[in-house]
Amino acid sequence: MKHLLKLEGMKEADARIILTLAKKAKKTRGDKRTDPGPLAGQIWALIFTKASTRTRVSFEVAIRELGGVPTFLSAAEIQLGRGELVRDTARVMGRMVHGAIIRTFAQADVDEFAEFAKIPTINALTDEEHPCQILSDIFTIEEKRGPIHGKKIVFIGDAACNVPRSWAEAAKIFGFQLVCGAPKEFKPPKIGGSVSWVEDPYEAAVGADVLYSDVWVSMGKEAEAGMREKIFAPYQINRKLVERAKKDALVLHCLPAYRGKEISAEILEERAQDIFDQAENRLHTQKGILEWIVS
Image (cartoon, rainbow, N blue to C red):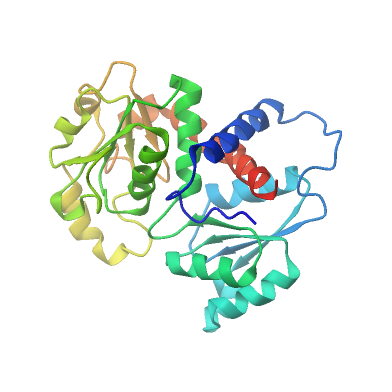
């Protein structure tokens, strides 16, 4: 049985299968199916403790277009929200649905669910990992700039959060360089090998193939908003920073974007085509993940 709980330990061969399936899904979307689809007859639960736009919509549409039926369950609507143990919810869900997609706070909850549900389980975001986002981002980069191997990916902002943590694992899998431009209080937890950190964002951006940003205030960190915005103020993707990267560098953002904070309004609108292609590619990559996981 396959799961996608994190990128750590994933083989490049498996990741490449997902990306190949994503490419096929994008190319053939809209074509009339001649088969019932790989999820035909299956019901997949989406268990979300955290709010979502792109992740929820992309997975619900992906499941339906692959022949399955999604059922969305917010934590407030099920007994998890009233203190039921994850393992007990998992034991019940495992008897009723064919797979689960979980978006929550603790990585341990996703791991425990997979252990006790004994059905394919996908991590749709935790505080520690965001594997689906990064696989989709790599699909976008390779679609627009060719193989990611050997490229310089520069993350600007909170390098201790889930997105750059998953980027760091991807760097090991795909053989690219990840440079994090971040304040020392928010540097990546693991530095070395293909992952490096510099405090100066402009130094980090030099020669970048891709400039990437995320929100300064992640879900669950709202009480720290004032402090974070003050610390991260110098870490904005703007015209001056983009000029330090390669001339054809991609600018990506996993959204939602707060213009004038982690990215300037000017740069976001200038690079909107790439950023919203990146968002669309979540759908195609989710299809690739689902097809891979049930194969």
